[in-house]
Image 1 (cartoon, one colour):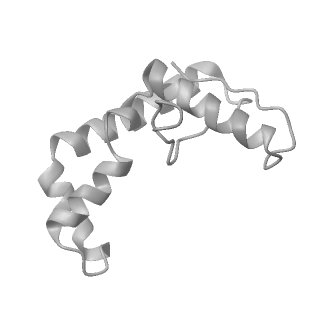
Image 2 (image 1 turned 45 degrees about the horizontal axis):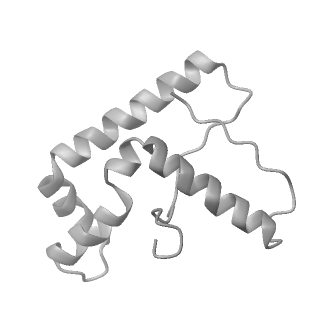
Length: 107
């Protein structure tokens, strides 16, 4: 973030481009609804996750989850989209990716 002023993309959901746009949209909405549920029921989600938290406290588990499940997870927005473009462009420029990147975001 210090270098670019953008968040660091830690992950993302992808869907194949050969799936019909209406279905891609529906899938995106289902994922968004699931994320909304988790954000709304945060304490319950943390309690559920503790079984897989490898001995972490509930507080640390909640912090860890918050790195991956947050408003950027729900909707990248323009800032998140810019961060993903920058991340992938830099990876290509440095030779980590050897094919052109053609991003499409499902709205």
